[in-house]
Image (cartoon, rainbow over all chains, first blue to last red; front, side, top):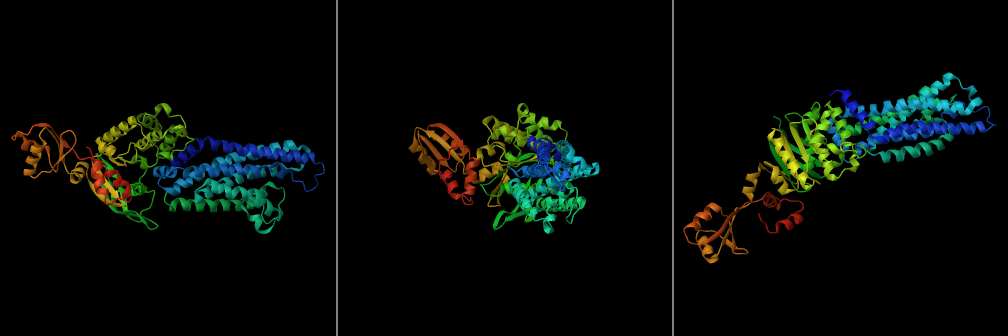
Length: 245
Length: 313
């Protein structure tokens, strides 16, 4: 069974569910909106000193936009675990490894594309709002942040997709990941350094800072996030292949 | 010609033997009714045949090949397992387009099977707006998508309206006439009797019967004859002399057990006993099935309750 028709089918599944398309649009809107708010806050704050990071300000919204990306990845997989849908899918494509690879591709590629759009929109919005305060931001740094944003959001969507396949539930996945990202990571992030730097979101978000003082640089940070996503996908693939549908 | 071959199939969940050393064949060109009480292992068997669950031991093959090794399986086997499987937010047409794409089936097949299932006018409506009967029709449409030589349907009549019941009956007959192997599980005896040629009956995961439907009924239900006469005493005496046991019913009707109309007609013709009516009471699939499962059913109480009711043919 060739891969292309299976991928076509999985891509059609995503395109034909309005909630998934809306979810992808939400990634762009939420990220840009929160970046704009962060920029407005910073530009009204005249006392912002030497340690002000315009790059991080421009990509501040990613912390919230990633929730939409995770919801997209989780929902695209969890729809298979409702009402016997997985049985219909696997009866059509009994090569489960290939099926799950197609599913992950159909999630990862649009998430990357939307993530890149998000990156450039967020950068443009952030710079516009910051005005003079963004003068220290070089074009190379901006490009790095925008591309990093695309890669980061795609990896977070895949992390959620893999976890959902393992747990067989989108609700379970989101109730683990969202508190983790919003609470655990913020709290642990405060006492930065050491193990906390290697959490999937902390590591990947180094790319949004002008300078990195931790163990990881912008690209090695994304590589760590990629390892987390790959581990989640491998666990999900194992679950799909081994368990009765 | 493709057949389904189930060979010594066993599936154990924890301590439960859902399917227990099951062997049977589903031949092409006829409708095989798949019967058994709840929990007998029918749905599990179908999932094992489709490679969705892994057997503990034994094999299930389609045309000699395991389902998972089929290339573009929708062209070989069409299945309806659960009418709720289509995503509620997708339209019926999109649901079928997704399935068609994975097996490189042309998109017009989606429209063709929707037409065949009587859903053409609602094809672009979201599945969540569908009634159970419409979802069943969509599931059956999905099973027919690849024009497969083997069709497996789990409780296809569920939720169908009377028109739908007639439609599915005629569809199944036609699929068998076209030379396909058709396996249909059901709880509904009268419904199964209207379309099945052959029966496979399960109880507690084991095979209880695998034979033509007519043979199954004749082997289990004693033939009876109904006679109406104005001279009951003479009739009873005549029949008793020839070893028949006649029981009086209402309105001068007598029921003769273990008898055929041919025998009773011949007996009474020369004796002057006035016969107003003479009719065979054919055994029904329901009677035969209940007779078989009375001893085997897991839910014995439920079964005996129905079997105590008068069995009018």
